[in-house]
Image (cartoon, rainbow, N blue to C red; front, side, top):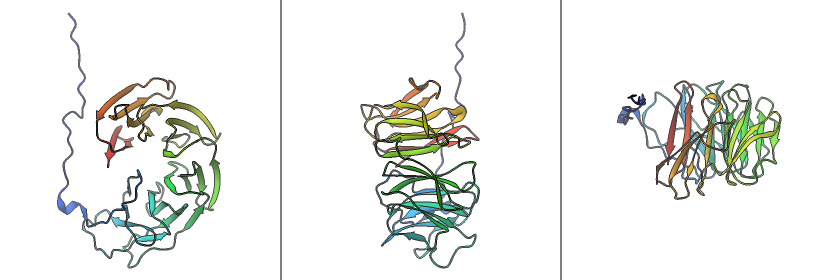
Length: 286
């Protein structure tokens, strides 16, 4: 009689531990704007967090080592005339960060290594090309000075940050609100999710949709998608019964999922983050 071998997950007994109080950042007035953004971004030097700000949009930048209570008068990065919706650190320069706003613009900022004594108000460059609020920005993972933005005008734009010029605009691929956009590891492909219930894989150089899946999750709530190992796509969404679901898809066979799993019945959208070095997907919910 053959024995069945059961593979145990190496993460079966791994549990997260709450950080100690002296390792936290306290008294930060995080933005209350309604948007399915993470509202924060981190790199090897800094953590940036979108905050409440009167008369415009702002975010705060803190050195990673400067934990504890944050001074209410700590300088902010300000310049947008409406709330900031997304921020993203440049992968090629730890002192450069981009911000997207309800004011339809994208701004790129130079952050000094020292803590400034007053607000940073002058961006390095302002990118204007959207007609409605810009809710998504993402730097190209390998090409320097290339930044992606997506707005509520259903438009995806690639920018040359060095010159401030638009490289290309994907203006006829999405029929409704874009929920998220993600690069694959070398930046040759994009994956997008949209209110029209479709996941699209796009070759931005050819400006073509190379794969498309309608209703990867049957629910009506927003869907998220990211590239993971070997070009596979990981999605989060909701079932018809409003259960939160996780899906794994093969780009070469987009009709049926490799795996589809219910998680729980919470109504918060799950934001997936992939660590390529450890092949782990982290899920964040609001």
